[in-house]
Amino acid sequence: MTAHRHPDSIDVPFAVAAMHRLRFTGDVLGADREVLAGVLKPSGDRAARVQFWLDGHLATARPDMVERIEAFYRAFPNGILPAGNVQIVPGGEIVKNDIHILERMLKVFHAADLDRRSYVVVIGGGAVLDAVGFAAAIAHRGIRLVRLPTTTLSQADSGIGVKNSVNLFGKKNWIGTFAVPWAVINDAALLGTLSDRDFICGFSESVKVSLLKDAALFSELCGTAGRIRRRDLAAALPMIRASAKLHLDHITKGGDPFEANEARPLDFGHWSAHKLETMTDFALRHGEAVAIGVAVDTVYSSLVHGLPVSDAERVLRCLVELGFSLSDAALWNAETLFEGLEEFRQHLGGRLTLTMLRGVGDPIDVHEVDREQMCAAIGRVAEFVRADGSLTSAAGG
Ligand SMILES: NC(=O)c1ccc[n+]([C@@H]2O[C@H](COP(=O)([O-])OP(=O)(O)OC[C@H]3O[C@@H](n4cnc5c(N)ncnc54)[C@H](O)[C@@H]3O)[C@@H](O)[C@H]2O)c1
Ligand SMILES: [Zn+2]
Image (tube, rainbow, N blue to C red; front, side):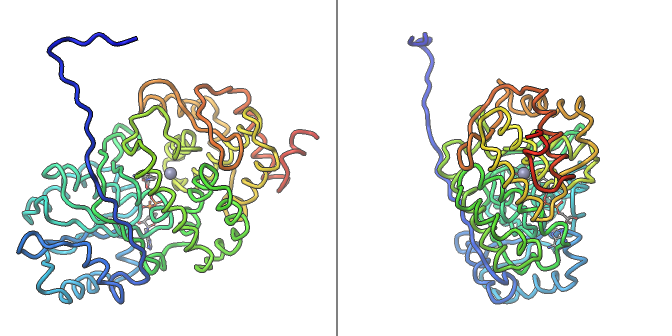
């Protein structure tokens, strides 16, 4: 059926070219500083004006950071100019929960006269990247943003994405934009001061993306989970890199970078994860909540969508070996948890669309959830944790 078009309407599809620049370094403010300098292009014949923003917890853990940033400026006296002092913001979710911090960021940009050809370089965890990135995206309708993610989660996942946001009305990521970062630099040395707890967090996203897109990578993760948990970088860094690359390919080649379609495949396991984060008042980290959400939706997939139970067991075992606790009291508040489904739908509008698994590397979109089976899945994950290692015994056979 051809839709009726008014004779005075003009509908022209168009595409906008964009570039996603991803770099991997070992010491971005030291031996590899040319890599950072290389993405800070001069503005015509004028040096690049660059303002640095730092995650407060990183600044505390690495008191030399500010001095290293100043040394970076000094190393490129002709090409790079400081635009104001190094700025430090509170690390973690708090920076996204206080809208006044956002306003202060805008004031700092304004005071330094940043323009669309200036650079905001933000060094921090996913929360700080989201908040500073949002401020940079709305100032002058977009200042160039260079992200240096400092958590495994942001290096493997969120730092690569084209989203930024802060929380509003008690809801995660309610206000934000889609904006392609100017560049992302994943630096191994920046992970050095992370707590063990935060170090493993990123690997729940690696499990997630491998389950969606790369069965071989998932097997590799299963094989290296113990080493990753012990922070063996020779095992961990290649997994971060592979996850980041899958994420990048999804954005640049997947055909829907700005999530106009109903499905958000990278959000496997996230309907409950987001809800668990707010239900626990962010006592659960994003990566920890994702581990639980992925476990639950994996078992649900085995109950409803034909994922082999043996594969579901591998997923849970891998998450446990990485060091995740797959149980949380909030899971038993089913009524509130299921509100997460409606919030997930409402964020996008349209029909509820969740990604589930038919097999490892074989996702499907589904439009409804059998709540009884979902409760059964939650029960089996809990039983797996108690019995340590089997889903079939929980099923009684
Ligand atoms: N934009 C997106 O697409 C997207 C996707 C997924 C998650 N997110 C968001 O990312 C946030 C979670 O990010 P995260 O998991 O990176 O955690 P985080 O930013 O909350 O960081 C965890 C903690 O570690 C500290 N920290 C960070 N780097 C450190 C370092 N190198 N040394 C010492 N301490 C350090 C932080 O200050 C914080 O206290 C959530 O707000 C989540 O919603 C965004
Ligand atoms: Zn996530």
